Length: 297
Image (cartoon, rainbow, N blue to C red; front, side, top):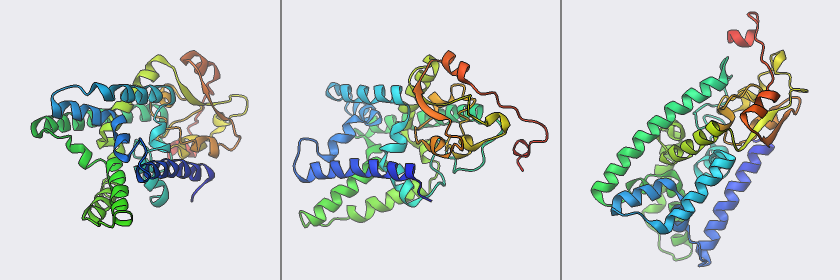
């Protein structure tokens, strides 16, 4: 089922891809390959492979991390080409950075989301360390050949060769097959492998520690979480209970806005706030022993 918010995410991501492809086709100043220059993982690999810091790429990388610090992992939901493909073809299984597929959230989704995020960050850091070591050994940023984002742009480049230059190549077959295998066979790619997610995770940890940046917040005057409603945490791919968020909304939130769309009382809004602000607006969640949701029924 494609909701209005999901269609908006698809439109935004597809629009960015179309803009990049049009720029490359028209010979503009920002061809497809230059978009990868903004990737923190690519920056680290280039530095490891060349043995020197590519200072010219540093401003763009820092700008991307600054945006992540302010808006969280919005890139994952709204701009990432791999999530675009999942939104179009993959339904909800799974979509979140924690690998959830929209199933009922656990009794304490906020703490579980934070723990899972920390575990995923460690795994992604290990993957990144291995890739940097291999890139240093072979003198080439190897992950760029495997990255789903790079494969999407590589497929666009292969299509451009076919229809514009009339030069079909093996890339038109290999790149899409590799992309489909990574996204739909390795379903924990975003949560356990993606090196880019490691850098985004560090920025998210920093914003959670400082309590800064935008986040979804529940209005305690209208929220019915205290009556047992779990609509936000069930709809959220990360399992975040917006009514009792702790730091999870700053750490794991991808700004997909599913919680906003699925809230039955429309109590969730986006806003900036400090930890004290959130504590004042926090809605207590009371779960009785007879609550069927708490029992998992």
